[in-house]
Image 1 (cartoon, protein in one colour):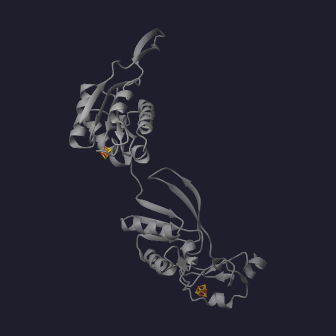
Image 2 (image 1 turned 30 degrees about the horizontal axis):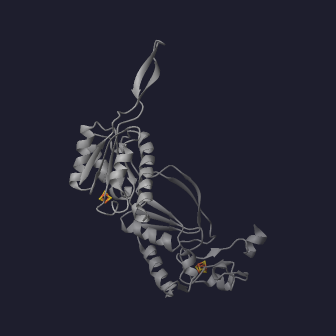
Image 3 (image 1 turned 90 degrees about the vertical axis):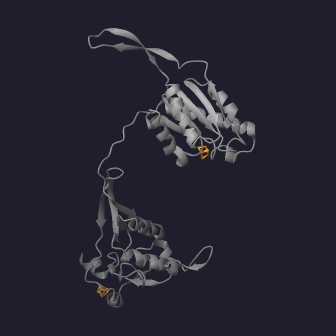
Length: 329
Ligand code: SF4
Ligand code: SF4
């Protein structure tokens, strides 16, 4: 079902002054507002039950620049997309708005339809009148008014859209995950299992974050270690993941796909490749300090491994409390 509404007025024009190379001034008539076409979707009854799509379609044609508006049962369907292609050609549309669901659902669908009609895909926008309107309201009049307002905002947006060109550039297919708590660990695993190299960074001597400190997790009161340790072991064994524990991010430059990150690897003052994690150093160390891992409920030594299953299982000298560093540095 559809009904087409055409605006009685053409796109407004205005005069602008142009200065030529030889300094001559001339008045040039330019269209200030592009020709906009709008498709209002019913989404079956998802939108049409709460929003009066016919009224929206008719009201919105009064907006400057709107030269065509219609409403249709399922704009994302094949006939719906074909309507878009045909309307672009027939009405010489320069901008396209589909008032329907979230852009997450169908932005690509409609941008492809725009391109098929000969319009730059970047001249197509979606006005979300489903998730942000019909699904969250009950009053039909108010929802209809809101839908019109939402479309008005997108009309203003689409007027300023530029005809972008898609370019490509080389990117580094490697990820840095900052923070190796349970969320960072799972993120690193997901990326690595997707086939990409991952650097998993944490400022503490081992990975695990707060999850490592918990006995049970809410609300099921599952044993935290039973969830956490298999993940940590998986990270340690995954050849695509490099753990950068006891490290800090110093600087991030660049942009998406080409970040450059300066990382400071803090000194443990223990030769990492030679430490077996036997714990003998902690046993012999005379300096006892509050154990932050146990939230101060116990003591640890100045040379320590935070907890028994720590990954990496390498000792670290806490230089603030080590007698040697305190007296000889
Ligand atoms: S475009 Fe979106 S709102 Fe319209 S029918 Fe398809 S899913 Fe529903
Ligand atoms: S845990 Fe301590 S004693 Fe054992 S190898 Fe590592 S640094 Fe040496």
